[in-house]
Length: 300
Image 1: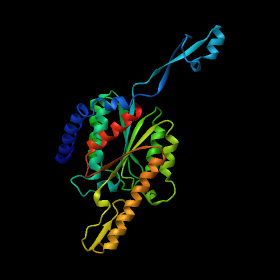
Image 2 (image 1 turned 120 degrees about the horizontal axis):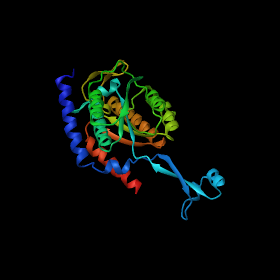
Image 3 (image 1 turned 45 degrees about the vertical axis):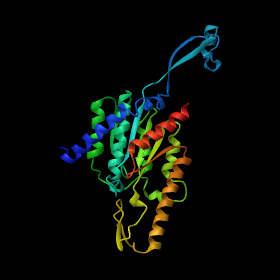
Image 4 (image 1 turned 135 degrees about the horizontal axis):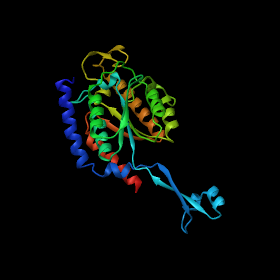
């Protein structure tokens, strides 16, 4: 049974998502996320103007005249939502927690996919994959996905992005458009060398398109001027005490967090991935629309 608070959140995001999909985003999703795979359809006799690269030489030799292979485009897409459910997603200093913003993003993407008759699935992960929802079509299925996003209680608090991406590669035989929605705060974040999950993403790039959605909150970058503070890591539980009244401490903290964020963002971009940055203080709709417009221009 869902609590009244969760039901209220689901109803709110449903109304908002449906409105966005039916108005501002209508047509954008369809134009930029076309089925790009191809399936063999038939062989027919060569006609002037056909691409010589499509000639089926075995059939041509057997028949004594040139034949070409014909393919048809696969219009149906498989959209996978890789959702970071780790402890840090429960952080927020605005009206929204990061996990609420993540659920809103996923809901809008899921409604867009279902409207386009695509299949939608989800991988909910922490430091392990905690739930897998195989991709299906239909409004009833997308409602199930959305309910899980808002109500799922993970058993663990850590983060392992590499394992989530590897799991995608194991369970998805067809090409997918996969949105990895995370704050990318993991033990690998502090590494100066290339992060293992980036290498895993690169290895899958030939089959799947991975799009990073990088979440953040303004409070992650600034300490309040509040004297002695106890800071607790949401994922490990580790605590440290800092003197937030000291200007140099606040400056060091801001510089450290800003540098880590920039390094992670750069790592994603060097992996030749699209990256959508969304803050809990910003608008999900504006960020997604901005990305859709940029991607639409690239396709022209």
